[in-house]
Amino acid sequence: MRFAIRLRPENEPFKVPFNHQHKLQGLIYRRIQRVNPELSLRLHSPKVPKLFTFSLFMAERRDFEKGRPYFLGYGRGFFYFSTAVPEVAEAFITGLLQKPEVELWGEMFTVEGVKALAEPERLSGRKFVTLSPIAVTTRRLQFGKPRSYDLSPSEPEFYGLIRENLREKYLHIYGTNPPEDFEMKVLNAKPKRFEVKPGIFQVAWHLVFRAKGAEGLLRAGYLAGFGEKNSIGFGMVKVDGRKMIWKKKPEGRCG
Image (cartoon, rainbow, N blue to C red; front, side, top):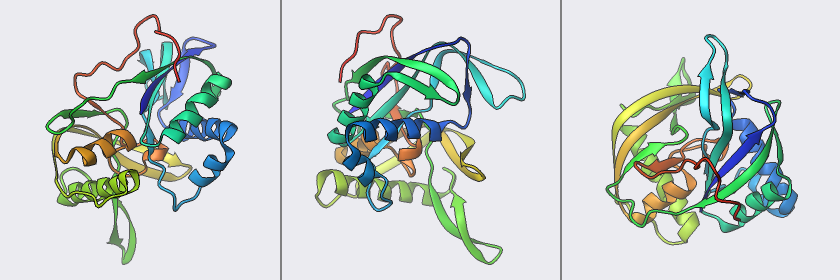
């Protein structure tokens, strides 16, 4: 299940900091907690798979000021949310519509519409584009101590860990032994460095890639995100060529 969330700003232009995923994550948890406190509590457990992801925050038009850690947005703001768990979708979307006034990074918005997006019937063999960059990490010795290391698409381990992560998601979503069949070919890659928490950074990758394999594995990634740290805003993708932007006049709300 995936949704486009469209927001009307109180002021224009509005600022959007480049490092903003933690603010969107906070909004998601607050709205889930408002509707389903028990679910929110479960999702805060580090042992519980979150199985949701979201895109970066976007604007209909953007402008940049040299040297500033933000962009200026014009028109409506919007982002995308995706989950493999209907309970999570219901709680978040209901919470948004119950309390449409939203404060993000000091800017005020009103949720103007929520649009459910159709899923493609077939994913294997398709070309994908990231809506939020893909993060893959491992542990490596640095200065004699094991430390977190951010992998790049130029390293074979990157693809093996993505496959194993998809298999883990598949197991939680479908409850059956996950298939092995998965291949991924990166066509274009661009790194981005994010501050996910004060003083904690993550190098992740905006990718255009082609993937083929078991439909269940690919759908697990399509719904819950590719790679790691999906619930803090990494790994959401779209099928290349599928229109996901709003029309100038929204088609109305739906849950």
